[in-house]
Image 1: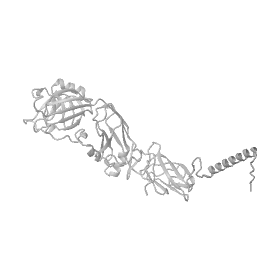
Image 2: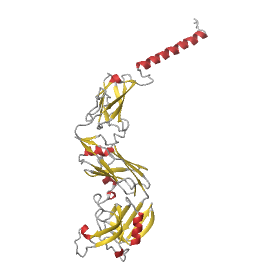
Image 3: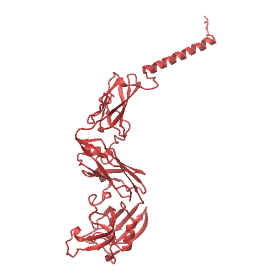
Image 4: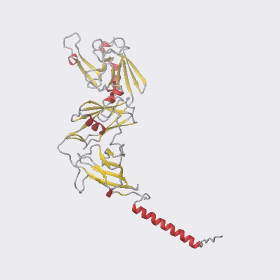
Length: 423
């Protein structure tokens, strides 16, 4: 038995297709309005979340209270939260594995304006978005932790550490971590580096190796308004920028009685010298030029040698380049020219003839490296007598950081996205 198949007229076919396309378009538009997974853009998630910030305009949040965002709608969940203040500082946070709640894990800043961007999904998987804004007020009675960076702006040698002096002591490791995360050091070109806590009020920063020649080093603090501990909040700090010059390294070989100056890896001059004699041996290790004094009157009494003893002295000294605060210099010593290059006869300084001392004085600058090898003296102290920072190996240096040995987890205030915690 045969079937008769009726084909619609061309006009009707075109009309039917047209109607179908219109109907489908209407359906898509309706889905967009209803917020289905076919939505072209995220819906407003205002009705699906709540947060504990101030609800009334003009009111400010307590910076001591952690921020919290909660998913309120059945079947819905929070997928991502980014919280940032007007200064560009991100707030670390943790999102529950089921997406029901997000809360901040790093302190909010005082007197700051925050923008919180919340991403959600409803029960059908459609994405939602909500942007929240609020301001924090002043904290309760407090101490302010101010920071002063060093050195002064200028140009230095490649051995110059960065210093940070705190106005209040910080002993607790967790509080130290808050402070350290906020102290930013960036160099161009970039190098690996770390802060090291010298004591409760002082930190030093240095790279793993010396700074690159002709680098720019920028130092700043994002601690202003950040809670550090009970009744202690971060204060302002003046940013610092300095540059490095050529890589100038002077190596004194106490056994060979020579000082050799290298510039950018090339030997510039070898100078006959004398170093500390037995009982007054020159310290081994790396030191950094602290300053230059055209004239110094050196008295033995300042280093504990009694006046009138066989070792006492009172001498005018020219072209003195200081490398320790306790009185070690590289300087002109015309009285020991006969021993320079052959014997060690000084009380700890590196002595050379006046012409060479003047050349050395004019060649080096603050931050340049002066290293002593093959001396019978002790190794230069890391801290307290100048910059002996480079005498700690890298692992020991990083161990002096409050951030897990100097590396630590990713900085929560540098990260832009905050993901769910593991279940």
